[in-house]
Image (cartoon, rainbow, N blue to C red):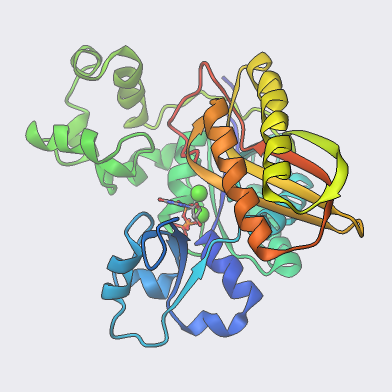
Length: 364
Ligand code: DGT
Ligand code: CA
Ligand code: CA
């Protein structure tokens, strides 16, 4: 394969940074973005936190009460509920900017993308770093968002590089410097190697990426299966031939209907939404896809538009999940607004194919 120049762009502490952009006064405080569960009170988990909160040990996935405990000395700490629609709007704006600067654009998630800019920079890494700086500046100017960019000859190393200096990082890994980068990293810095895999290596007394190089591919395949074993064998050597594949985030599936009568009654709306779910689910099945985000849309009698969406823990193609989340969104939406509704819609996004989906990219 010819030499490539690949970028991985990742927005810094994304949801929390979006909240700082909305309320700049938050910047000097610990900020935790929370997914409150239906049980009320403080039950629920931290989606993400800004770097001040992280310095107290707060991280994605811990419980809200644990985060409050860690921050008990900071009376100024704030705990904000997630607002996916707002983050999505900022994400879309930033992604549109990024697309202008690349030959191939691969959307990975709300806060990350791969670019192949080989042609644009003539295969030259100095040109590439100027281009990356331009992208960072432009995103900052137009959205106020800071991001980290990794530049490398392949996706794997670009992803590791974007994570290397964060926030607001720009890390270039020249083709002959890959080993030097990998040698200083923990095993779990390799995407796709999680805590469990790392623990297995620890039991084998293998602590560093260099230690792992002692294992031949047969041993790895035997222990982890052929696919994962071969992946690890190549990854610790910085080898990755995955092309950057054109993929846009605008793909979503939706269904919209006009109600027989304008209404704000839960039973009537729920019945219609469940029907819509069945119709949308047929499309989902036909296209062999899974979704990770579910949204509803109301067009009110006065024609104003209301949307509400939520991110699921895992991708799914299940009708039951679709209906359950849709109904939950309906309940929340009716609590927030009482006006009568004229048209109803649902949508799924954050799509992935059912087969052949690799989990080495963190598709949250
Ligand atoms: P960083 O390390 O500066 O890139 O920080 P983030 O927050 O951007 O972290 P990243 O890139 O792993 O995740 C992007 C967004 O995904 C993050 O802002 C919130 C969401 N997210 C990440 N982990 C979790 C999780 O465990 N639960 C939930 N609900 N959301 C998560
Ligand atoms: Ca991020
Ligand atoms: Ca990310």
